Image (tube, rainbow, N blue to C red):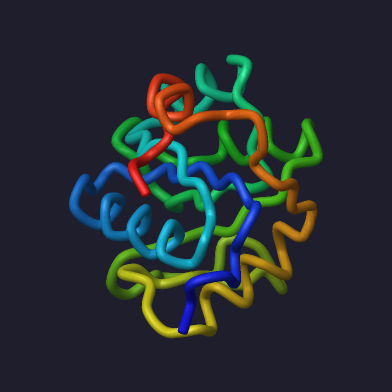
Length: 141
């Protein structure tokens, strides 16, 4: 059961496949996280990161609508924000040596445990109502 594995985490989903991204949001909210997005491009992800929303980590598809996700990855590393790469189907190679790759759609406990371990800077989501989270781009729970 996933219902509390990601409790308190705020996770941004960056994926250009709308249906896969929605399923990823459902998976992580089902595990207790608040999900932002999904966002389909580097441009939108970078704009979101420049806004006032705070995230604990990012699930980042390797290749987005506007090309490689390197621009977003570089900004995440500059901000010291943890991220995990995702890929649909068969990925040609791991994005970075030693970095795990999550295959979508996510299912079972293993992805949630990896996300929890990687995004361990969990903060409780207190003082924000659901309407404020939706207005900031957070998925419905």
